[in-house]
Length: 189
Picture 1 (cartoon, rainbow, N blue to C red):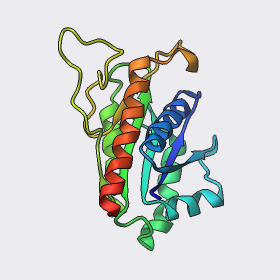
Picture 2 (picture 1 turned 120 degrees about the horizontal axis):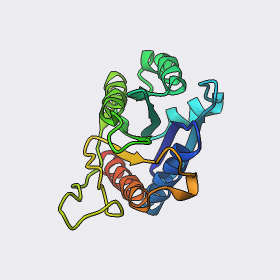
Picture 3 (picture 1 turned 135 degrees about the vertical axis):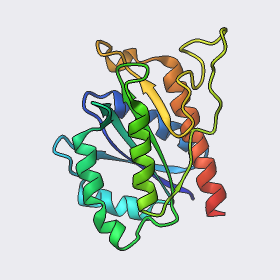
Picture 4 (picture 1 turned 120 degrees about the vertical axis):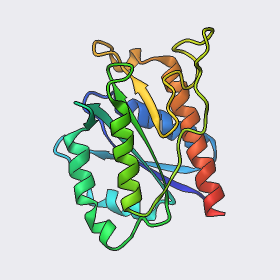
């Protein structure tokens, strides 16, 4: 069975909801998917490192804070120098997602960082696999309304609770999970 790990940090619960929705999409495509949460101190449990090593694909997730990944995610990325040194993730499929309060919020720099991290690990990056919904007839509840190709982009208004997240962004997250699972399966052969 195809194994995917989603390693993520969530400051207020919104990014965790995205991770769970991506997980559901990948699972619907037949993958076994484990969530590896980065805690408030930027740490991953030791078993989390083993989960990442055993995975066929890794999806990175972080909120965008001040135009970049959270410091907790950055601490995890810095700690990934150990698997980098031994090339534990080489050849695995990688993908990424981010969430912030504004429609743009400089999410692109976060996705670029996540893809750079994957490249440093010699991973194979895949994007959303979908065109944006960018015609006049489209709205926030349509797939990929924020237009991410390189990675999944999600917006959670600053005064919105987790249960008030934009339905279209969550539908996009589910489709993204399915796409990543399909790519991992095709690479795994």
